[in-house]
Length: 232
Image 1 (cartoon, helix red, strand yellow):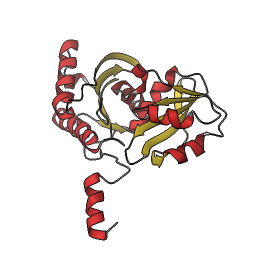
Image 2 (cartoon, rainbow, N blue to C red):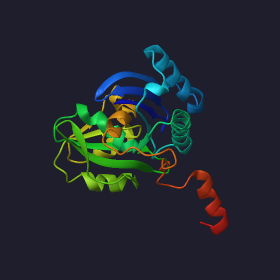
Image 3 (cartoon, one colour):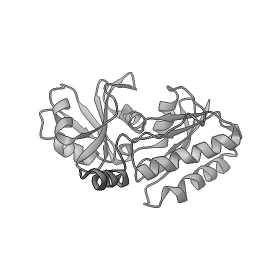
Image 4 (tube, rainbow, N blue to C red):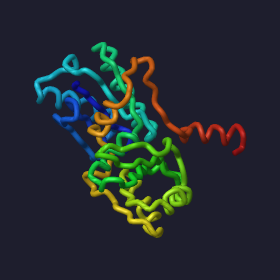
């Protein structure tokens, strides 16, 4: 099954094509340009170089959040447009669930800590355990502070492998605990469309109408509106 996947939930952007578990191609950028300028051209260039079109794809997948509100919306909108025009099924996966596949490089049985910088002294976080090269989820996606994250991990007697754009901040917090902490090397640290492909193979396909972004928190504009209206 050919899966075309998009990842735009944070500063980096990537597009990947997998055929089953085999990575055929991946286009990755960390240049700070707006994803609305880069994401679709990246996909078009990649498919052109492969001699393929969207009609050759079996499934379109995307990281549906949590993450940057703008980035998540762009990714979801792009694959909705492509899927609508080509009449293809789609699959939205957790950004954190896709990130966990970077932990395939970690020792067997390691705890994979996915940490995105959610600002306001919080992380978007989920914990996984690597079993036979596959990340198994231990908790739901959540927005939590560093103290809560340290509390959840410090008594776990496992190697902790940290991935995500918040990995550096998370590493500094966890390194004070009596646990073995590994900061993923930079090429494995950030979100990637390859992880979206891998996660999508274990999720159910859905229709364009069913695909919705997942934010976990209100946007800054919504929070500011609440503060004006309710004074909090």
